[in-house]
Image (cartoon, rainbow, N blue to C red; front, side):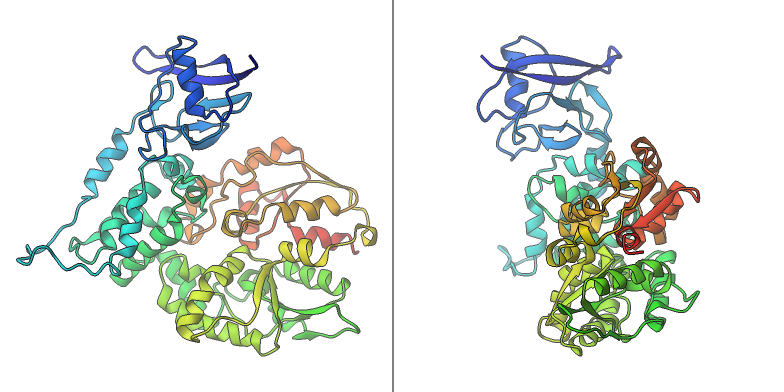
Length: 507
């Protein structure tokens, strides 16, 4: 019978033996899962690998393990040759693949996971408006497998300061329930609600496909704000600046929008697209904005960059200032581009693109009672899907590069291959994939603004990953990530936006 090799982590905390890895040859069973393999190792091979399991159908949440570095349910993950099975990270290991969940369980008890009522209703059964508890009821799908905590970069870096995605979800079930009268907002704040970068790693590994950053973290933050307990001091500085000036950063030089015409005219353009600069390309990283405009112009795309545009509101939305963002930014930005009747708008900022794509449709319905009349694309999507850059028109660039995946682009918008396709089209460039290229740099979700030290701890392995590639340049496709990576890598390391690399081919 054909066999596969499986490497399994072995450790016994009582005997203090290990850690070590044992390799097993197991039958290559059709449609086998990791759980099937573990059962085979014990029952057929007679080994004694310790692991948890119960239902085998994704309902109990007991069989969480790390498979080839990814938190997974053993009963759902397909088995493969040469796979490595390890215990979930961010928990003490008791034996082999069994981790100690007691710290999590104690924390949940502290969160008072039950409805608290001021008085007992005399009218039973109660007439419950299911519409009002719908968001709370959906969170009941969580099976507490703890894969999200194992994957969470903030939980790891905060070392107990952040309760983690699953614990926040348990808290949210009652915070969102109108029947609950316990003051959940102070507890939410003390459990580290502003430690989350909204990187969506938890969402990526969740077997129940729960969208935790959007449906839990940001909604809990809005409750904290509504009760006057948030956001943090750093968030308030940026929010006040955005509401006052239209940008979350101060003007330190002439803004990009003031140095270029609103409409860049040309003969026989292929099409006209809008350019949403975002705050950083307009006020800080202007070379990114200039490169984007130059690339489009060189490829016969007419660019419209309305001067009426302002911050998209993402920095406020991410930290719970929803009403402020809705009132100040949505209508003005939509009308600024609809004025020029463009059907497509591009931006270099994934945070802006995600906000336009996921937040603006809902906010526009509330403010304008309709949807925007154009779509918004990240520039990497536009260059790879719409423009199809021609390598024959590019000059060779002798560089070895690697690439950091911005969280809001990769997991937020599902854009991972497009930047790589663009890089590989550039003559002379040697591309080296970086270890954990999609690990969070720590900047997003208001963490850089409100918890700067924590943000650096989250991204502190990036310099090591970069060094191992031997690359000359770390590329990214996010101005915010670029600022963070420059801080993490130091002044002697070169960090460029993807469009800045493409721009080099046109010099």
